[in-house]
Length: 131
Image 1 (cartoon, rainbow, N blue to C red):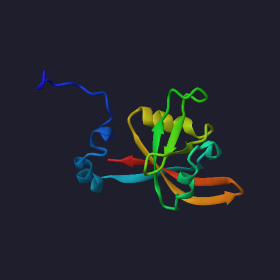
Image 2 (image 1 turned 180 degrees about the vertical axis):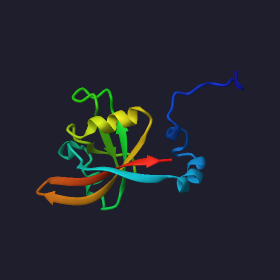
Image 3 (image 1 turned 90 degrees about the horizontal axis):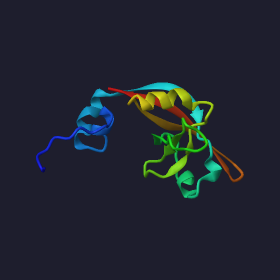
């Protein structure tokens, strides 16, 4: 039926993210710094241009990857164009994955970039976006 009401299993943030309503709510949010870390697995990224285009201050998307065969608490790090940059390190991700599984919205910001030969180190700060 066209006028049927359906219940969607989404977090509150998902309902307004990428939605014009989200622009209205943005002034009512603030970011709480949780932890400083880095992006792991950057050497395995297929599209290295995504890493080369990063700048200090860029906001990164964190996305759960529960079907990851190496880590049940995996959190993928994506740039503004949704390109994979790597992961939050396994040693740091358990609390963040639990927060995200509970519907909390986390983001990361690039705080330092360093190249060591072909290796690109990306230091990030992780924030809880509070409404």
